[in-house]
Structure formats: structure tokens, C-alpha cells
Image (cartoon, rainbow, N blue to C red; front, side, top):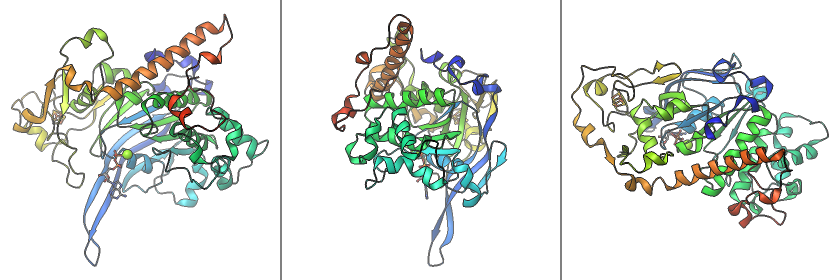
Length: 431
Ligand SMILES: Nc1ncnc2c1ncn2[C@@H]1O[C@H](COP(=O)(O)OP(=O)(O)O)[C@@H](O)[C@H]1O
Ligand code: SF4
Ligand SMILES: [Mg+2]
């Protein structure tokens, strides 16, 4: 089901064209964000954390771009810079064709309606002293917008839209579970009908059983409201089912950017392959085999002094001398699939003359049997299974709906959410 989830038939009219033909909403070129490191009394700059170090991508109307990579590779910084919560050090950002790279606070104000961010921490991102009504209505106050029918009515409509109850208006954040708080964060982000929503690890802080419900809610809302998403995650299993395209980041760079299907069926960058090795293979026929799974060793190197050449060469099992000396450019090796690698997987070698492996390459990764990764893959498997189950339910309901009306009793409850839910439980989620 997941492969057909993004069927164009369910996308609103304005975004009904195939993704590749849709209008570009956001265009990012050569984007950099370096944080200066200062020392001494004079606070002289002695270096920089190169959190984002020259990335290019575009996001088209109505699509979901997933951004994945290990912790510390610059995903959150990228999210904060493209939403202009932080200033870029270099490069450019165009939104609807307009250059917003250097807009000041006043210049950005009207755009704040169009570009919204959902944060990772549903506990820290809601002010505990404010009611839900006050939190979700804040964007209206800040932008001086008076919705038709009044703010309260609109906020209650938004609460219902995200699967909460209008009665939650006067309650406080501590009365809600993590999943419900993230729904509140989503309602707040959607209040002003944004065009672009950047979600930074929106489900990482939630119980596995709740993650799929929130991801599916975001997916449903996208189709209902024609939203465009950039969804950041450290785990491929979260973005796999909802992304049209996926960008893989490593140490401040995009190393592969491809259509979801291409990325899963034939990943070209060794790092992508390594990330995917932590995600269980859904095909049971391949499960039994001693599949080729690559275990990434060591930590991400420091972005203060990234490795020379290809930044991944200190952990890549295919690294040769040219990888150490020459940075591979991000090039389109197949239509729609951009990769930065001298020796890509699933494609002809770009530097075939360079065959001698670096000594680090031999220790960089190991091929392991399925069982070894079973534990680390548990979370991913659970999320993927939840998403698939929820989607299967949706498909089954759709098929049944002609024969009999939907029966809410058949909807699964939200276990983690109901545990510490307020007296009026939220409506069940997997619509
Ligand atoms: N305000 C900041 N000042 C200095 N360094 C920062 C700042 N924000 C992030 N970094 C550094 O930038 C790198 C990328 O961080 P981040 O964007 O949070 O990565 P991710 O979201 O992928 O985990 C990290 O090394 C982090 O320590
Ligand atoms: S083969 Fe070389 S260029 Fe490709 S990812 Fe590995 S180190 Fe980088
Ligand atoms: Mg982050």
C-alpha cells in the first residue's frame, strides 16, 4: 500500500500534476550555515562549525521531501535556515520565486504565515502556562488575523482537524500526552494555512505506537489541505511511507537525493545503503537470506574539521585514494537521482581506475547477519508495521464504505495517548 499511498487522485486539484512537473515552491542553492567559534578576550574567530556546508535542492508544491541522516549532520540547522529562523552564511533561498535569503524580520513577517515549523519536542514547544486555546490562537494574534467566525471557533475547528476535541480549548499542555501535544503543535502550525511546513523530527520523541498515528495524521492533512512538507528524521522508516523524494545528509552535505522508490530499490550512495541496513527488509523472501547488511561504525566526524575529499571516506567500506583527496560532486546519475560518490552502488564506477581500498575502508563497516541488527532495527520495524497496518485499515475502510458506513468502534485506540489523556479522550487517530 505504501507505494501507492501518494496517489495523485487524492491530492487536491492544484497539486494534481506529477510531482516532477509541479511548480517549485522552495529552491535552495549552495546553502551554508557556519557557526563561528570564538576565543580569547577579543573573541577572535578561530574556526567554524560547518553545520550546513553547501546544499542544493528544491521542493515542489504538494510534495513531501524527507531529509534523513545521523544526529549532528545538520538537518535541524538546515530546517531553521530554510524557514529563516536562522540566517544563512552563504547560498540562496527562494520561496515562490522570491529571494528570501537576506530578508529581515519585517520583510519575513508576511512570509511567516506561509512557512511554518513543527518541532521535535512536544513537551518543550508548548508554553505550560498557556491554555491550548491560547497556544493555537497565537499565530492569529501575532499576524493580526481575524478568521471568519472568530478565533475561538477557528481554533476549535483546528483541534478537531488534528483529532482532538473542541473541549480541549481551556485545558493546559500538562493534561495531554506526547502524541496529543504534537497534535496541538500541528494545529498551531496549520492555523494560518501555511504553504510550506518544515517538521523537524516530529515523532522522534513519541512512543513507537504513537509515531505512526502522528505521521499518518500529517499525511492525511497534506492531502486534505494541499500542504507541502519537508520532514526531517534520523530514521528512514519514518519518512519512507510519506515522502515523495528523500534527501540523505551527511556532515552538512546532501550525498543522495532521489525519488523514494529509486532510493529504496537501488540506493547509490554507500551511506544511504548503510542507513537502510538498519531498516528491516520488508520482503519476507529476502528476510531468510543472510542479507547484505552494513553496520556503520564509529561516530560522525566533527563538522569543525570535516574529512578531506569525500566526507564519508573515514567510514566508507568502498573508500579509495581519490575519495580521500577529491570531493565528489552531487550529480544526476539517473533521471531524478542525484548522488555524490566516486564508486556508487547500483551504478557504474565513476573512478574505475582507482581500485585500491584505503585501510580504513576495510574496518569501516562489516557485513552482518540479520540477527545482529534485529535489536537495533526493532524500533524501525515497529514504526513501519504500525504505518502499514494503519494504512491497510484505511484502505479496507475505504473499500467497505460503499457497503456499510464507517464504524468508529473498529478504529484502534491510541494506547499511549489515552494513558494520560484528559477526561474527554481525543478522537481516535488513524483516519
Ligand atoms: N547554534 C549553534 N552553535 C554552534 N554549533 C551549532 C549550533 N547549532 C547546531 N550546531 C552544530 O551544528 C551541527 C549540526 O547540528 P544539527 O543541525 O542540530 O544536526 P542534526 O539536526 O542533524 O542532529 C552539530 O555539530 C551541532 O553541534
Ligand atoms: S566510495 Fe568514496 S566517494 Fe563514495 S561514499 Fe565512499 S568514500 Fe565517498
Ligand atoms: Mg536535529
